[in-house]
Length: 406
Ligand SMILES: Cc1ncc(COP(=O)(O)O)c(C=O)c1O
Image 1 (tube, rainbow, N blue to C red):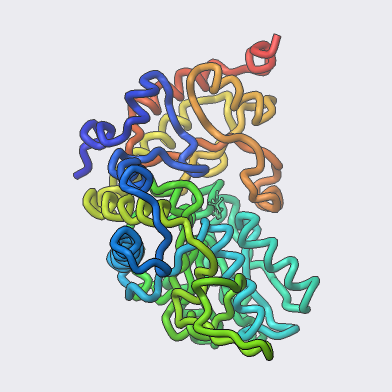
Image 2 (cartoon, rainbow, N blue to C red; image 1 turned 180 degrees about the horizontal axis):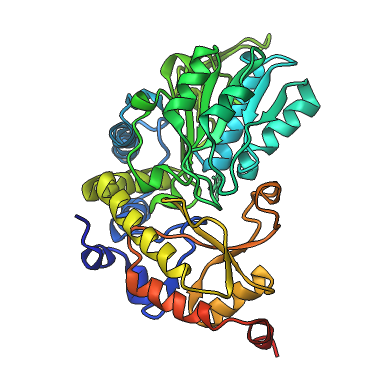
């Protein structure tokens, strides 16, 4: 069982901000002291580049940088050489899409997505249609964003070469049936691609059990430093996938005539000087989550979310969009109040949420509204914070929300 009072002591944020309620974890998360220490060690001990220097300081960071892959191998149940460092989910999803465009997908091939997806798992496919005639189609979802397998089966056809969906969606918190979707994809010779930005930080992810081909997620949404992320890919697929960025560190050699030879995966995807301190800090975050136990994190958050959802149902001044989902954020609007005004009212009461479209700009096709208020939790949030949130939200009216500006 996760002891939230003990856990909160690991995060200096709570000492620095004793009165603030942070419910914007879908955007980014607070950092435990061990991650802050790992990053600052790089600056205080002495910076050096990785995989380029033959002196002890450089070799020290080489070892830590490479070892981080093992932490993610443990977290995801894969091999260390199946872990690629990126700058975040956006970078990961673009590398996967553009990497596949080059030597997996051809004009006319179809990628199945949903209207639930974050921009980074929509826009690359949109551009691909413009640039190379690769098509996308939508698997229908229900009003709370969930894919039902009978709809996924109907959407599948011989032209489909990939399914690309979020593990948990970033507004409605729909937890998609990844294992069943992967089986469906593979029965039809298609790849299974997962945007894990809102799923990996919050519970166990066993890529072998799920049989996922590619997974992208962000480090900063799991207690890691900014500008960090991961691609997991099955090794033979990583070997076949084309890197988007070319440059130092990822090539084995190149000749004046234009011949190029890349490094093996994963290095071939890490062109240029990487975010060394970010990667090392991210490794520390992964070890920290593993020490808490991903199952414990999931159980704690599920319980907290269920409590939050029950308390939301007491409010008669809100439209609550995802009352039945067990995971992810609480999405709502106060009746007649613009989402941003609700967000500002909550902010004036020391509560941080996000309001707007949350980069899921076609979700209005599902829920019929462009903007929502999103309260997103992490394992350090508490029922007392939820109670305070309910108390403040209960009193919001149009007059009050607009009144805070005058
Ligand atoms: C589902 C999902 N995918 C992708 C992203 C993009 O993550 P990043 O901004 O770290 O690249 C987010 C961020 O909110 C997200 O929620």
